Length: 177
Length: 177
Image (cartoon, rainbow over all chains, first blue to last red; front, side):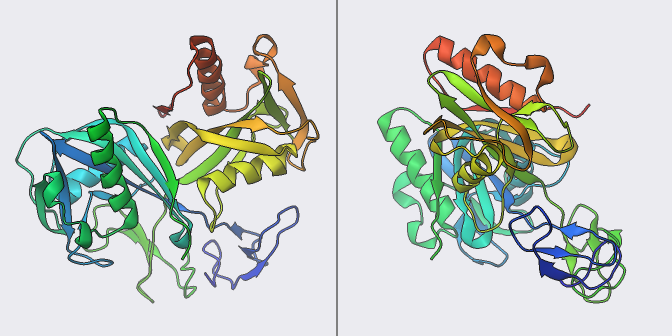
């Protein structure tokens, strides 16, 4: 950021009074431009023991498989974001269950949140951001073609928890490289 | 937002190609300015059955009581944010436990996340954003002077769970008014 979004003047990085971190501060209108992590919210949609994955039609990680997920929007709840993203990317209608994994990714200033969910019917089809959508049993999950570490970790927890007979909430961090 | 933070040109709201929501789009440099919810992260610090609360020295809700919490910063994890905010607002060193409540507040485009935590010593003291910091047993919690609904809900869950003998993760939404 180099210009003030409120008045268009140039901004410089400095620590505002009473703050401890450098911010983009506008000396013209006084506005302080904070930059904060974003929430990426998605679902782990299950259909009779199989999980629904999408193959990405966009960068980053074009062609790799992911759980349906995307940036949470203003004016919605985390649960609404998970349902919306699953419908947009996979054309899939789901019944949402509880939050399942929450993973900080400080390297890209994101927090990824996935809900457990049940696929309601087999009418799903790829949205604009997906090449294909398919259901996978554990032995055929394309582990080497998973788009993001948070997705791989979430899938691993899901299959481990199912084997153990009980699903529970998992919090984790992906350390900076 | 009325000006492009990348080039300083005026921006207008419209739906970009392939998108479904209006964004601030810069016709000069092509940048799209997304606006997304922010994470507010804090802790429920316990000292031998009492909970630590801070009385706010800043708006909004000046003079009201809150759990230590604040906006998550770039380059940190949710757990680091909870520890940092507790140190900044209450001068309290804590040992963090698991995520405890996660509450969407779409009216203000925020998601509030609180961790359970143990206060490590009694050396706490108010930071710049707090008038005072104190430990409260359940009967003397100032319920009518709690700053935010997410804090009241989190405190209620904590005392209810303690009574029931088991703490577990709670997800909720504060509906728009």
